[in-house]
Image 1 (tube, rainbow, N blue to C red):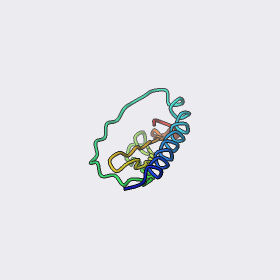
Image 2: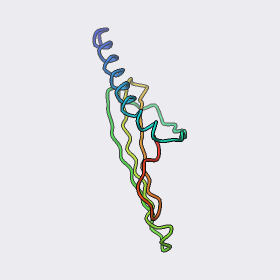
Image 3: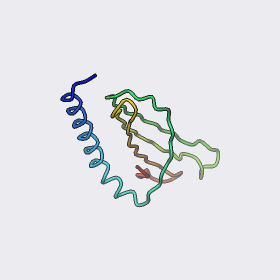
Image 4: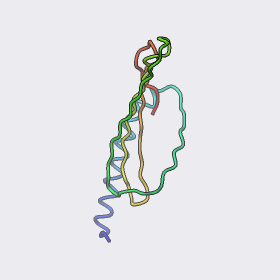
Length: 106
């Protein structure tokens, strides 16, 4: 069991990290224009102190040129705050068929 001093240092570090992530995401939230919520339910298997970065990308292929070449890309950054609670922020960019890439959501 960690001492109170180590626990308070960890708590202060985690709070500082969450504050920085929140401040960094603020411009993205303001620029997004519309808010949408996605509900994800995961098993509470959390590694305390673990930071993760995950990327995802996809694209469409279609014989019809009006439907081909749509793309999306996501980046997620997460942190295991405690042994039972992790937090994560995600940003997404999209490109419509025949269109340009644009920021879509956080």
